[in-house]
Image 1 (cartoon, rainbow over the protein chains, first blue to last red):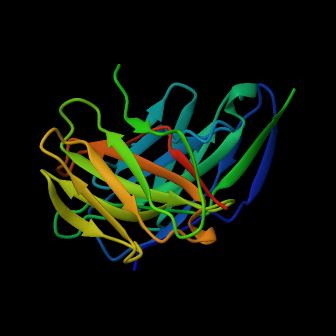
Image 2 (image 1 turned 30 degrees about the horizontal axis):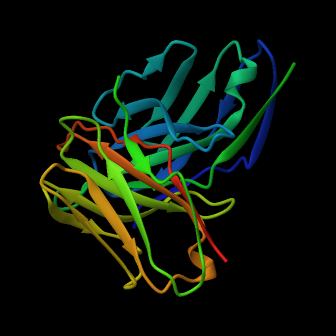
Length: 116
Length: 113
């Protein structure tokens, strides 16, 4: 079964600094998708960024970028110029494709604190 | 842009009661997913529907059932509620297919007393 591991239960960063959140996954599939979702105190699940496994280029979305290492099965999220509004729980997710279903498998999450 | 709508946003029930959660996907999205997130936990997949047919089933108790209607909205029916069913229930929708991304609704917070 596919698993997603986030080894950092909590991280903190100073405002305007850069922070990297780690994620590793286990799969025997060659084609899949990886996501980072943000869950602020409102508990809304917000898509931050996604990466297709067949693409070698790392995805970027403004201040958010990923370091995707397919061979190492690693998918880290870098947040540059951190802002107070970035404080949230961040979930790494792997999308399974089995017989037409595309359910998400989530890691346990990393709680990010941004210090002013 | 239109988002996924879930109702109600909050629900309080007694043990052994029944609850119905509703989900209205983003327009033109034909695939709906339900997830359960317990306190301090990551979301767990329950069930999904594509074009009104169940497409996958996860760790959903037999006391729960769900369906997708002709207008693509979905309902999650929960019977014989237990204290452990207290959680945040998310609905997500997508266009389906290999390139889809799931967009989440705000969730329904269910409290069972």
